[in-house]
Length: 87
Length: 253
View 1: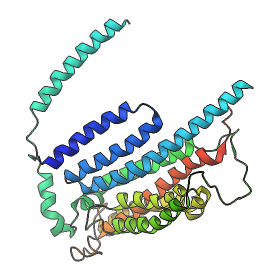
View 2: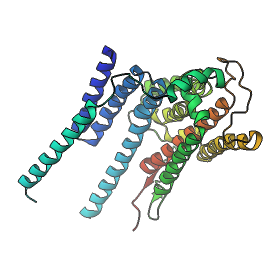
View 3: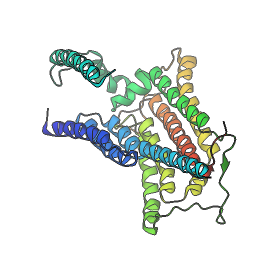
View 4: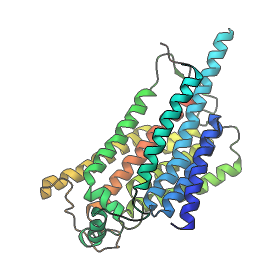
């Protein structure tokens, strides 16, 4: 195992923990996409560039966008609910 | 159940899990010690039998092309599910159009961000197409390239112009693209069955290894998958964007 591989494994271990520890979903999304970069590096140094290519786009563009949009929708819904309760 | 009982139960379970995990880890082969036969066979025949230098693509779109057909329809089916769940319900309505009907500008999208987005779009599209058509030569292929291509129109949205994005990637077009890609991949398999007698038989001329048009059906399959994946992601993106930005009100139960 090379130094790069050990470093990538460590980054993934720390990153996974950081995603769980982030708590607030909004911040969690950003930490998740950084974690995705760590996973991309992991796949790359373990000689799976095909997987790394998929991971980099899905984790930095695809997944965060969908989570952010879902969060926005949920908040809209909560705000509408609150307004209705106040009336 | 009290807290103590739960902790005791967890302790027993964790200890048991720990023992089994340690036992399993101790029995693992050494790092990088590959015992299988399949990998070595593929390594040996990839270039000679398929004229493909990226063996992952050769495996995905030819040697186990049938599995990829299943995977493709998993993606197709899940996007169908997204469309079904996020459809406009009774009680929901499109938000009234603002006076700038064709624009939907977000606060915070500065001029610099817009200029950068504009510069980035052609590069993203070029990389996406490159990855799709060079699937059999270098790492990448239909799936990876397709996702990258789907990121192109998304950048228009990041520049703060959602409704512009709908102009760049109209819903009908992306839906047709997705369906045509899925059908195209199935047709690659069927044409093998019809013209060469075996489902997913690579009967096209294999060309010269390392050339753009080599590997027979790999390029065709890769392009079809690229179309399907980019269409699928764009359909999913626009459904999510519709829900979050255009539709307001909550569904009546």
